[in-house]
Image (spheres, rainbow, N blue to C red):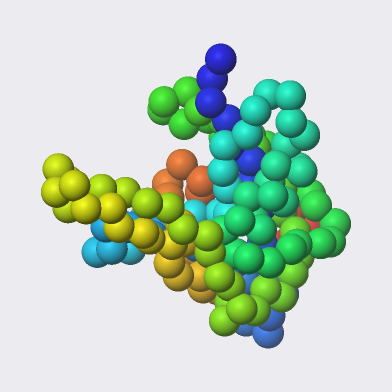
Length: 153
């Protein structure tokens, strides 16, 4: 069975246009990476689980906040690995300073025997469409383009 993730793409209307809230993955592998590494709030889920409920759960795990609103399903994105990302867009004026991500542990440095803890998401920020297109992981770019196109109609 192919792996699958469910996620939430948060947007808001601003005087300068539509803004998108993205998260930067935490941990030592991403500490010096920026453009092309930001992500929607997402995580893996089982085939028996409702995708939207999984997306809401993952959002809460990665932000420490609950999300409500009208969720718009987006077209699934298939990664090169075969993993499928199911996503929903929702309008919400997420207060980034309130975000507190859960953490994970990893042996760091490798083969050191020392376990270190890192936040799953270490930064959260709002971006306009053009900047979000640069910041987001390229595999998730179709999600941004789809909701942006729908919102402009």
